[in-house]
Length: 339
Image 1 (cartoon, rainbow, N blue to C red):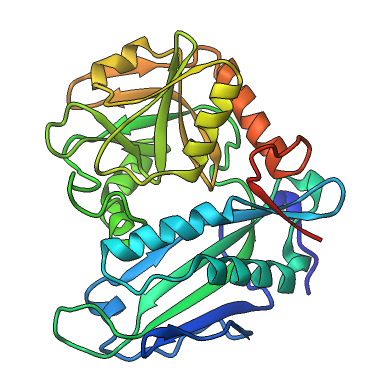
Image 2: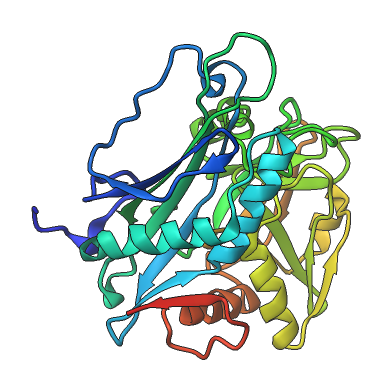
């Protein structure tokens, strides 16, 4: 294999040695199979291609100072995958099979787990697709589940540094009673136009308002939003937000640090009262927000005056990463250690 420049990895795709697959047929899942091919042989009438029967997950593995590999909160990802399956009527993958396949994928590609001091990690992508051939609009009877991995650098090239975000009121991410709470490809397809427009305007991401009333904060593109004020960690409650495992972890750590935690609707005007704000998710952990501009209302909300992340965001970020890398005790059993 070519020598990898670990400290200069993008958040992109790199070929690794193996992916792990399981097939659902006649009501049951096959034993895991390891594959070297990066391709899928797919029928032209597969439901994933026509009716969007596709769900996925994202999690990471980290190499610690002790050389051991740690996978972060894979059971939570397995449970969220099941929730997404229920949301669009796909066969649910057993949690134990999910975990077994994650461990296999990491072990078989261990040489691609970046070294401890690199700041990079191994991204793990579980993917489940409907594969049976049909043209009627109904759930598939056959499914393929695949886990592939790839080493990645930071999601935002700026790293842990505040970036500006924008509210674009003419776009919605997901409807309140739609698929927003599930990790399905359609939600991401629906965000591409707004996301590209934000980038063209010089912003790192879109902050969506709720689709029904356009009053409340929803999601930051591919991540959950949180704000800090009066020693309180506040994150939106909504029927169209993906339940972020990173956000769930940060809420627990915020509580441990003595902060009050509130999950509730956040009206846009409340942004003016936050001392810090950030987007959180698997890819970046925390992306601190410099400011949020609401272009159509000609409003701007500033969170960082010196271009640096706020002290609480910084502390939460360091604490979570320390657990992921094994530098601090994992008292909640979030980490699976692979020797």
